Amino acid sequence: MSSKQFTKSHENNDGKIFTTNLGFTALCFLIGLAGFGYILATLPGIAESPTDPSRTCIVDGWKLGLIITHVLVFAIIPLAMRIFYNSLKNLGLPSRSIFASQLGLAFVMVAIASEIGWHVTQCWYYQNDFTMLNFMFYFFLISAFALWADGLVEKTTIITNLINIVFAISLLVVSILYPLGYKAGNDNFKIPIYIALTIVLGVLTYRGYKILQDWKIILFPIFSVGVNLTFVFLLDKFGGNPYTDPQVTFNALFHILHDLVGTEAGLVIFTWLVYSKGIAQKNSKATLATEKN
Image 1 (cartoon, rainbow, N blue to C red):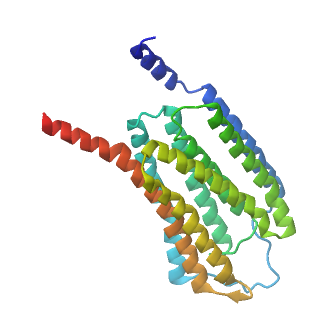
Image 2: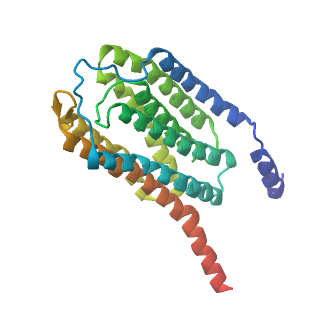
């Protein structure tokens, strides 16, 4: 087969909606979705009402800061989606990969919407508890990063399929463990969630490096995982308790920094690197070519 025929065949196959790859991705998602359905059936929607009604709330300036920090994601993600779409297209990735990255980024917004709902039920005073909204945040965040990572696959192989299966099973596992943690009142049951997130982010970073060939991609997990979890640790350590030991300033400050300097900074860094590789470099080459002519 000539290169022209191969390209034409590839383009025709790339334009199909229902493909084997899509079916496999759907299967992986259904495995994870089974866990999500299990959680819906077993977990309460909001935290149980405490015996002491005097819960401390985050109000005024700190509350506004928290709201802005969380809503900011809904401005960053659409821009990131546009940049990833154009960049990955310029870099020659297949449409299935571009679709996966778009779906993954969209799932980030679903995760953040769940997180906002969770914080509203907490009166914006962060407390590590077990609720449906909290689980939805983690479920869709893991799903988002898994799809995002799948969106950076240049060629589907047995290994990439196995990794997707691992991601799907991890969603199922954390779905089973989460209600057990709720019943036991033990935060350690959330550790598998953090492990799953770290693994998915590791795969995402590796695949990002393969495409971008830029060492600065390491800044993405440093901020999204390292800085993020540092402030989560500080929240648990110094954030106080909304009933017995309220620490409004520390709670709000570390909460804002955990999102702003952690999650959102990592997202912006990754998006900027993709823009630099897939759009800025192409524009630069086009400008040079025009000047030569």
